[in-house]
Image: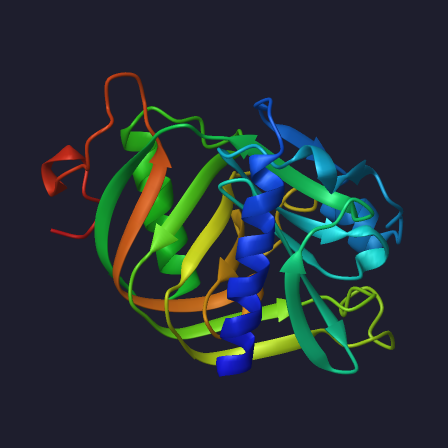
Length: 248
């Protein structure tokens, strides 16, 4: 695990250097869809990752040819791949392209403590309630970040094929266990199964942690904090009175 954490730190440092050389914010941008990439096999390169290095950018997606996962955190463009069954995380290079990507700039975030979440599904329920309470359109992709103490993290890194559409293809690398310094990054959107989300979820989230980086499959948090794009005039951390979605 220590070697993985060291590789992640090196990748973050390299990505930060690339970020410093890039300018120009972007709005919401999407390339490809889950259905055409995963189910129909149209996994060709659609967009170079070189243009997504602005400091406010977050994003999630998959590399061309489904050769790995893409996670963009504050303009740090990270790539997780699998070589001989071993996961590797690195900064994206000029030659990396995405076949699937959803990305957006967020300059200011508003934090909402939501307490413990016993499952990914419960986390999504609380995200949805927050979005509605604070005027966000749940039918449009909204950037989301989640922090907190994680007692169980489940992620995968795709390794060349969708395991559902192509069960005989290369198997993804999977992690299932405790995790430290976890951030979940991605988008929440309803009614977009097959386009931006898997059919079992209303969000497309990736995880970055000391132990693993990849597409989120499951999570258990004891003290989650959900961050949403700040609305006009709302830059402070929210208190429970601002719309705490926990059961009363």
